[in-house]
Structures are given as structure tokens and as C-alpha cells.
Length: 96
Image 1: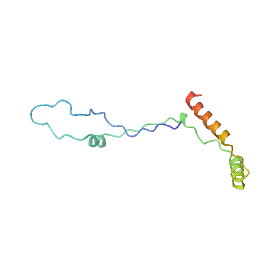
Image 2: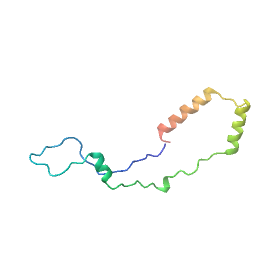
Image 3: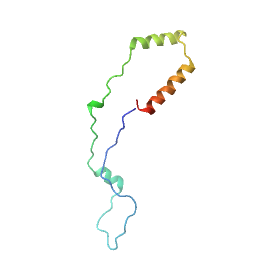
């Protein structure tokens, strides 16, 4: 499952018209986007413990399979491919 990326966080402001005060306005009203740009930006720090590192790829096996595909003798069995895709989806849903 890919990591969840969060954008910059700013102060939370209520949305909508809100209560209307009678009398003179007390100052200029900034838009939500102007407030978000004026607020200091905080970054989410990622833990090194959650970094999966390099993917385990057997380069020799990949080259062997590519060569077999180019030469036309690598068997692609649609039923095996479909079964593997279904199994991978079930594993992702089960959390194992």
C-alpha cells in the first residue's frame, strides 16, 4: 500500500458566513487562501522505521524473462495471470 502524503497544514478556520455583527467592521477580512499562505508551514516527518528500502529484484531473472518474451517462447497463460491478480487483491483486503 502506498504511503499517505499530506500537504502543508495551516490553521483551521470556520467556513461560511457565520454570525453577522452589527456596526462598523473592525478591519480588513482576509480570504481563506490568503490566511493559508500567511500561516507558517509545518511538514510531516516520516519515520525511517517505515521505509521499505529497495525492492528485491532479481535482475538476472528479469533479463531472462525479457529475452524469452522477445524470442516468443515465454508462456503467458491468461488464467494464471487472472488467478494471481485475484489472489493479490484478496491478500490486500485481508491485511495479511
